[in-house]
Image (tube, rainbow, N blue to C red):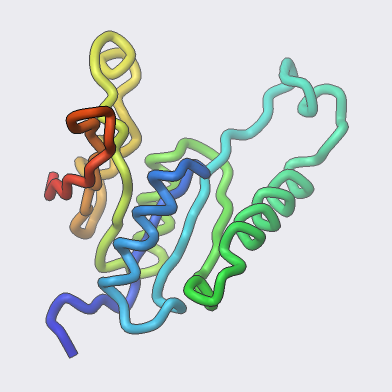
Length: 157
């Protein structure tokens, strides 16, 4: 067994292509897919949002829908036994809390390289997780190379 193999690896997802690439990278750190946890964090509805005030879908139904959507995306045999978790709240806090509870040894997540005022005002989820997580965080960056091709750059932030 390699010293790099982990018993529990967390991969946050925002349903982007980048987060599914992060899941593929995370698979390299575990012996079994059952040791991978794919987590999505959604914010609770407030009374002013459609659905929240109109009662078209309860939060429980929304969580179930998101879970089903992830299960559908992970139907390939290569993702068999990946653990799926849906949480509601602040993304960074929920990811960190879930990782602590699960006993994660590593978090693998994409960074979209947010810059400028938006980054300054809000901060990124990846940055908050890196700063507060109890375990190492592997941040995967995607940058555009020549001719607009995407190349993967691994950064140990």
